Amino acid sequence: MLTLEIITPDAKVLSAEATQVVLPTESGETGILTGHIPMVTKIVAGELKVIKEGITEFIAVDHGFAKVLGNTISVLTEAAIDVAVIDLSEVESAQARAEQALREAEAEGIDPFELEQLEKSVQFLIAQKLAKGRRR
Amino acid sequence: MANLRDIRRRIKSVKNTRQITRAMQLVSSSKMKRAQDAAVAGRPYALLLADLLDTVGEKLDLTGAAIAHPFFEKREVKTRGILILSTDKGLCGPLNTNLFRKIVDEVKGDAKFIAVGRKATQFISRSKRDLIADFTVSDKAAFSEIRPMLKLMIDAFLSGEIDTIEVAYPSFVNVLVQEPVIQSLLPIVDLREVLDQLKKRVAGEDNILGARSDAREMVFEPSAEEVLAQLPDLYVKVIIHQLLLESRAAEYSARMVAMKAATDNASSLVDDLTLDYNKARQAAITQEILEIAAAASAH
Image (cartoon, rainbow over all chains, first blue to last red; front, side, top):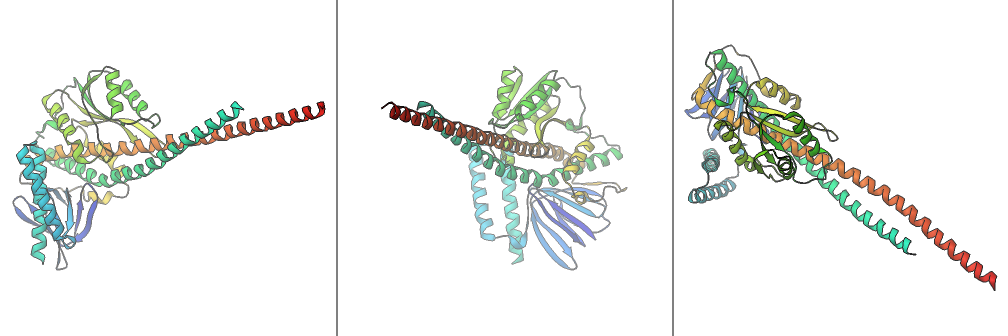
C-alpha cells in the first residue's frame, strides 16, 4: 500500500492509502506503485489519480513538487481540489476573470513574476475544467 | 459644588476609555485567533518543504555532487541583512521595544535592514541604521503582499549587497509570552535545525514526513538542476511568510493582554472615583444640614 499526502499552504488536503497514484509531471503522467525508486519531481497543473481497489479518484492539483520515498508520496502544491466537488460554472467564471486579469497585466506590462503566477492560476483552472469535463 | 462636577466628569471620561479598550481587547482576541489558525494551517506545508529540500540536499551529498546553488554557498559575512517584522500600531505592550532591544544587543557589526511595519521603520531611522526598504503588510498578510519584499531581499542577497538573510520577529510562545527571536535563513547552512523547530510546532503531524531512509539513489524529474532551481527559492519565501503570520499572532496576543490590563485599570479607577464622589456628596449634604440647623437655632 502507498501512503499519499497532499499538502497546500492553507491546509493538509488529503491523506489516504492507495494501490497506485498517477502524478501529472512535466514529462507526462507518471504512475507510482509500491517499491518505486526514490524520486523528486516537479508536477504541473493537472489531474492526479488515486487508484485504490479498482476505484479511481481524481484530484485536480496546481503546480508543485512531489516526493516519493519509501512507500510514501508527499505532494506539495499550491492548491488541490477533489474533482467531484468542482463546480464547473464557478470554474468557468473564475477562468474568465483570471484570463481577463492576465490580458490586462500583459497590456500594462507588470513584472514577469506576477505574470507567471497569473498564467499558472489560469492553467490550474483549465486543468480543473478538463478533469471535470472528462468525468461527466 | 464644583468638586462634585469635576469628579463626575472624570468618571465619565474614564468609562469612555474603558469602553474603547474593551472593544480593542475583543477585536484583538478574534484577530489573534484568526492569525493563529492561519499560522497553524501553513505549518505542514513549510515543514514538508523543508524536509523535501533536506532530502534533496542529502541525496545530492551522497552522490558526491556538490549543491551548486547560491543559497547554499557559505561566504564571508560582511553585511548582515535583517528583516524586522514589527507592528504598524502601538498599544501592544513591550512587544516592539523588546524586539528592538534584542537588535541593539545582538547586531553589532555592519548590517542593513528591511522593515515591515511602521514601528520598525521609525526605530531604524531614529537609531540611524541602514534601512534598505520598508513595507507595510495588511492584517491579512496574504502571500502576494510580501512578494515584492521577498524579491528585493533575494536580489540583494544574490548581488552581494547583503551576505545573510535573517528575520527578527516576536515569536508566539503563548498568549501571555512573546519572545523576540532572530532567525537566520540564508545561506542555508543547517536545515536540520529549522526542521526540528518546525517539527516541534507541528505536534502529532510527524506522519506527513513519511519514510526518511531509502538507500537507493534518488531520481530527479526532469533534472536535479530544475528541481534545485525552484525549491530553495520557494522554501525561503514560504518560511518568511510563515514567520510573518506568527509575528501577527504575537502582535494580537500582546495587544489583547495590554488592552485587558488597561480595561482592568480603568475599572479600578472608576471604583476609586465613585467612592470619592459619594464621599464628596455625603460631605455636601452634611454641610447643608449643619447650615440649616445652625440657622434654625439662631432664630
